Image (cartoon, rainbow, N blue to C red):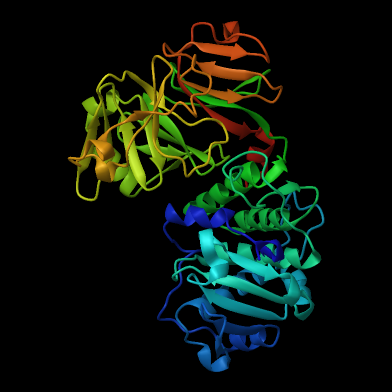
Length: 466
């Protein structure tokens, strides 16, 4: 039963975007040191279980050359031990938690489960079952060998904290609000499982030297901070992130306007990807913001596809959609999506698009939607259906259920409860409760392409300077 299961899935969904580098990858042809295996097995009983719940293996020192689950588990435990021993200033971790000592005290047995297990649905990272707590057992989901060591280490910290009775609550905002089961913590100060995992990630971030590894961990931190706590920590305020006509990324919380970054070249668009913004330059490059003054350039299929569009096409982009395996670009007369070998397009008929539509707190599993200049919202079929001959599958249809705030193309809720939006002409407008939208003079002379609901603070950026 789910009520007896405490799990950790939030950071696992990030794996679909990240590739493995030095601190993440496992050299499969290199055996573990006998000393490490002996040391860890003297502390933890590690076994494997199949999807039917039958124990299939009890690991011993003879498994030092294992190439997957057991090896990653020991490397994750060793990473926790190494990170815990570092004397590094870590502002949020005021108690300076020794994570390895904590795990050594709370856990005696680790069960490795395949992703086909019923406990490993919806990208679960692991689980603690109430009846197994007295025996100090945690279960880890090994997702087809794709789980990097650092994520597995964070999951172990998270699951171990559940041993103390901390349970998640229903999310009141963010990506997981629409889930039918609890996934969030009330606050960081409560020091539940998400807080322990977050503290570990922040300490890990400060021990890493490789800039790409640090970027990946910051991305996980950003997602955890923004979506895992109903009371968002570290001074983050609710508001709108927006790209203006001066190629600046601004944040507005209802009172103050902050310049997150000012770019020297033209920015085509920006999009939120699992908790952090991606900025698409007209020259074909893409950068990511993970609460660091130094933005990271993004390599890989996303950038490769974007560059194939060509300068003229990139200059016409109204908005970008990256979700549910799609990489799509909104143009005045069509949507272009990257497919396996090329691009496919969806031509508009009677629709004058303004932006892709995502209401604040809408589930990330929502369908692709477009809002037109008249305020109507249309559901767009998946790109795999663009070439279908059946009009039932390849046509857009109006979605009246989710047509919120028809007078603006995008909007966000601010810390003070006001709404900030942008109309079809790019004018910034605000709306208090029970009032009409009105032009905000603080943005006089500035037009905006899109506003995205976001949480931001300079305090978190300062935490992650190391």
